[in-house]
Amino acid sequence: MRRLTMALVALLVAGGALTFLAVRQLAPVAEEAPEVLFVVERGDSLARVAQKLEREGLVRNAAVVKWLARLRGLASKLHAGEYRFAASLAPGAMLERIAAGRVATHEVSLPEGFTAAQIGERLAAHGIVDAAAFAAAVQDAELAAQLAVPAAGLEGYLFPETYRLPRGLAASDVARILVEQFQRAWQDLEPEARERGLEMHAVVTLASIVEKETGAPEERPLIASVFANRLARNMRLESDPTVIYGIPDFDGNLQRRDLDDAANPYNTYQIQGLPPGPIANPGIDSLRAVVRPAETDYLYFVSKNDGTHQFSSSYRDHINAVNRFQRRRASK
Image (tube, one colour):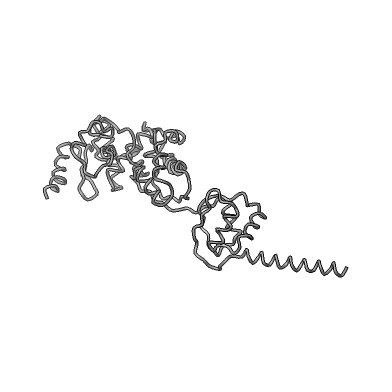
């Protein structure tokens, strides 16, 4: 009996020691530490994740981490992705984050007026998505239909905003996030646009032109009024940015022959009405300007070379403005 009692005591002591060691091994590596990016690759096993955590100095013991994951039922629930961990975080908390898929996100600012190609380049620069894959998603007519975009592609509907995005998403999922942000913005404008008989695609197309024509926020309703007045009078829009959009590999030098090129479907010096679709991705202010243009009789505008424009109601006044702001500049 005494031997049995001693054996039980020994087991309890051993168990207590093991428990102490386990608790010790599951304590954070440091009291304070900076966050680092930790990557769980697609297909990584629990053992590989635990070993990487130990190798990168984030946990004390990979074997104990594996044991804890199995104990908590997390072994088969680990999600691939990037995570932000500090060595001051408990291993259990790291496992919970990986199992919940609470991946790290990266801030990306997409300015108003970026084209889909520019957006793809910006996203690629932040490591969010491959630019070529994003371009393919933007041109996917089936994806556009799924997202209720009334066009064969997503140009114009990739809403400019500052986003926090994880790496590792499919290009189509990234595009979906941007389009859904546009749809939320459009909800506020849709009733007013419908009252004025304006279809969404026409608004987005014209707003993209307004966006590219001026960088001065206060001018957007005026620019929109010029184009609305010209459309109402069946006048061509004659917008340089639309021509440029239709020129492959534009070199920055718009020439007379470009304005005369009737083969360019975006050449609004040659075609009547709106171009086939948006030439950029407009922000909410340009969309609002098209839905609520200023009430003017302006038909023309010319750059004053300071980021703003001179607006005119007659062709004579427009020519005078061109002579004042453009030809004088060219002669200097």
